[in-house]
Amino acid sequence: MVEQFHSAADHIGLDINILRILGKSMNEIAINFPVEMESGDVEILSGYRVQHNNVRGPFIGGLRIHPSVSLSQIKALASWNTWKATLLDIPFGGAMGGIVASPADFSGMDLERTIRRYTYAIRSNIDPEYDVITPDINSNPRIMAWILDSYLTEVPIDQQNRYRHVVTGKPETLGGLPKYDDLMAKSILMLIKTWCDDKGMVLSGLTYALQGFGKIGSNLARHLDSEGCKLIAIEDSAGAFRDKDGLEVSELINYKRKFGRISGYPQGERIQHDDFLQTGVDILIFAALENQVSGSNAKSLNAKLIVEAANCPIDSEGDILLEEKGVDILPDILCNSGSLALSYFEWLQNKRSERFEFEELERMLENKMLKAYNLIENATEEYETNRRNAAYIKALTILERIYKSKGVFP
Image (cartoon, rainbow, N blue to C red; front, side, top):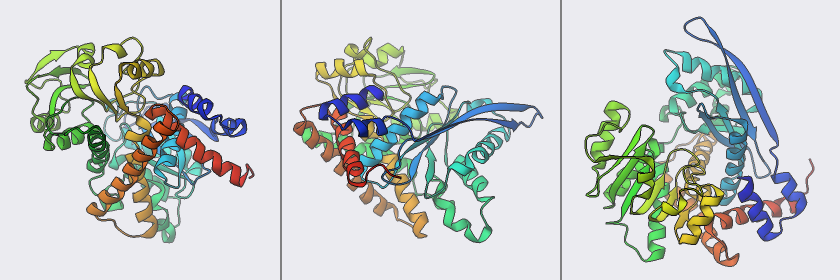
């Protein structure tokens, strides 16, 4: 993130004072909190909440629950959320939270106790008009509901409805959006279809490989299947396999629903990770974790378009090599920003005590995503650079104008 940030800043000669401001997080909260488990043992867990910048509005960002969570990672993700919110023109700044743990290691009510205890520990640092928590890896509507419930316990009962937008990604019964995961996948599909239109290509008949078959990956595969695309290779945390004749997406979804993972799916040839990356396809989609492509393997990728549905699947050296190969990339700063747009819509409907219909949300989401896409495409021509750098440049120039118009006090 730092390399990408400075590359864009250097490209436009960003004001040194603005660079200093945007190069640091406003607040970095690290906590160690005790949780009494069902066994009676007390575990001390670590967590974070980083608030990067709020010059455009309240902080907003996810809660990630994963053993790899670190302060450095959370700082990068918080910064990315600032850039994404700016590109989407939603009135927020970036934040991010994390708990160093694996949900699979919890039994019974231990996960709920952990979430509630984490919420209690950071409660004074979140507020619907200050910092809003959204879902991320291993956090879901149920976890968002636990955060909300824990937060509201210290809000006077006659004011609780005014504070429900402290969390987004909630169950629909608590003010969440209908079909959140489906809408998030559609936001990525919108960008792929627009890229095809720009290239004079027809989406139907294109082949793709997909890494990650969680909430976003599986829904995106379902939409691509309905558009006539063919899934050639797939990889999840337990392994990869492919079939040149195409894998049945609906059967994969049913298998994942039944067994929790797709590694034992009987169709296709089991392959290694490197073989998955080298599969010849039109579109390669990353919808899992960071750092999948580097200078050591970038040249072996064999796709026309890479879609970064996950954050930072390609490092800086890999980025350069792929650009030299002429591979198009829909960067993470654009491609997975739909989650922030949806969080804004949910925040807005809770704040107004109203309800958006699904079709209305689709139209609003498409408007935000395509405006950001066109903003970046125009910037690639204006600044003679790639999409990723263009996206950073546009975000930084917008933020620079704000600071220069308002100053830095308070």
